[in-house]
Image (cartoon, rainbow, N blue to C red; front, side):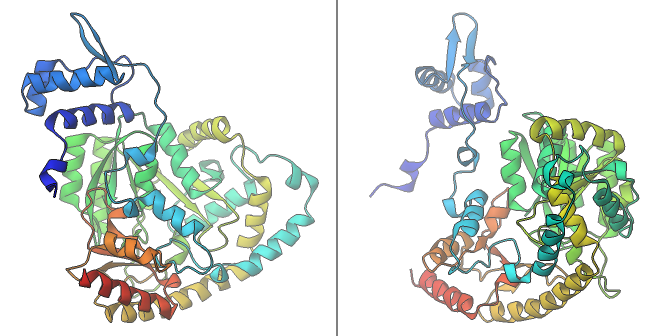
Length: 473
């Protein structure tokens, strides 16, 4: 039998892998001169002969080339971006892109407590059908023409009114509509970041943040997320050590933990960010899920405290209305919005005036507020149900949030979330293991559950069976 030790890469192979990773993430651009053999040997803490062998093998592979008397340089061959190769070398089940694909591609007969959205029959079907009927009667310009660069003025005015109730003061000129919340983040990253820049994320965080940032070929660092927000001491240390350009977070109803940012932590985050010239993307996609209960601790939005100076506030409506009607927004300083408009035109030309018009008619109808209240009531009921059913299996919430659709749960000590998720797939059960959300891969003892997708009693039967199978191995 081959030992685990023999499977580990040699020091030479480790150096080769490191050089290739730096080329893949554009830390080393084509034509870049690599560190000298002596300098690299000191950096890697190996002998010069080990580095020389690694460089020579990279030359043979065509990754780098040598110039006599000058050194080694990155070859000019262009390599296509492969996000899967840029992921940590982990079991495929914890790859966030893979989890998203499974949730989207699995048939109707599958159970999806690991997905990130509401069941279709929980969404605002009545409002969608009403909006579509109105759109069918709309002016030909709405049906046939491009949207204006900023987006439909009336919908931008609605966003201004909507967020003013959250304490965020803005004007329609500070609002740009996007195709989705994801596009909003992507545009901001395109605008702010260059390859090799450093971005801070929470640990754990929404897994697509990590996937998207790898697509932008930036360095990712993380800070532990507590029940009141990012750990301030860690946040301070990361800023000092890495000089990051951007921080991405959910201040309200954090994904995946369900925690909310406290006022004290929010002030400290902003003070540190302002001193360091750090921009912040505040993803408030779950704003409508927040329950306004005087007994609850209200979330402190960074955009409210910052006054939209260094904070980009984003949101969308797909979580509560329909995932098929894509529409999001960015609210920021007017000068920044002007720059983002040019980028939006360059990369997507225009938004959908038809989608924006339908969205406006849905949001401004009196039925929407009733729909939201119904959602709150249903979620409160299923949250209690899910906590009880998971508890019967020894799965306990890290915290029980006041709002939202997620429970971040700690598994019994002997269980690996990644292995459970892999086994569950054989039973048509899609789970969301903790390491998919963790940049440091420190959350294999956790699992995220979508309470709205956790009603089916068969979910708990399958979970119990999978746990028994795991424990019998």
